[in-house]
Image (tube, rainbow, N blue to C red; front, side, top):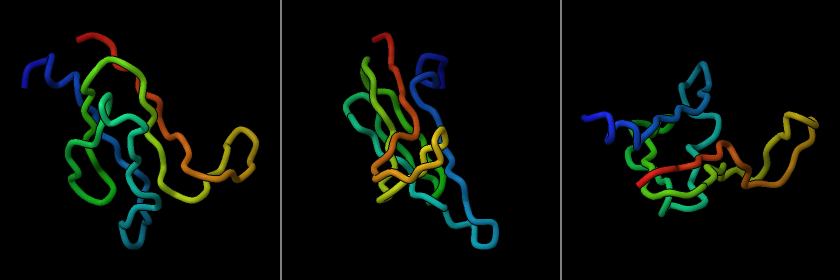
Length: 89
């Protein structure tokens, strides 16, 4: 894989339970699959995402709630996990 191709994808691994190895939360989904999308899921807790076009997309949880770490308050989901800015062609 050349540098240009490898720079267009990135892996994400979510936390798993120690005893079972099952993911605590499912892999996040993209707010805009035309910009960033899950391209390969190697197991329930690990996937590779591909940057497809310039723009900004958020990877979001599909859980019904999440915890705001700044305030310690639960909020309704889906919740952002990561914001991805794709630049270039």
